[in-house]
Amino acid sequence: MKKNQINYLDHVPKINRKWELLEDGMVEITVENKGMFNTIAQKIFKKPRYSFIKLDSYGSCVWQQIDGTRTIYEIGQILKETHKKAADQLYERLSTFFGILERNHYIVFINQDNEE
Image 1 (tube, rainbow, N blue to C red):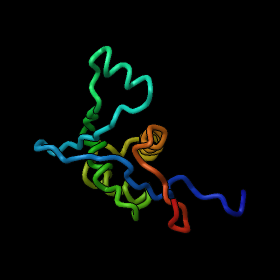
Image 2 (cartoon, one colour):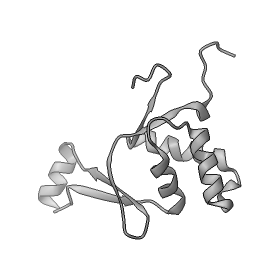
Image 3 (tube, rainbow, N blue to C red):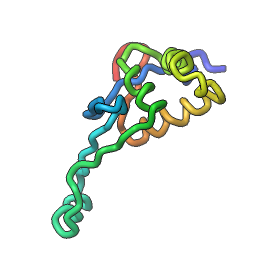
């Protein structure tokens, strides 16, 4: 095992998008559709400039725990306490969820030196 290798569950996520908490308690993430192809689609096909992604109850719970200080493991513990049914394959699902969030640039991970 490498000396500097860090466990994925020890990563600290930080939100990288605008979002709001809806009246029903669900999180809605706002994504601006930028880039040349999106600009063309907006002008020619009347596509919206912003997309709104509404998370389910598990995703909303996880999202609200992302504060730039909690690790994925700590967030998983909170999810497990608040949603008992989420305990089945919890960390496998959380790893997949955070991977998707990172690939879509909804979050970034803060390294151990607290630099992005």
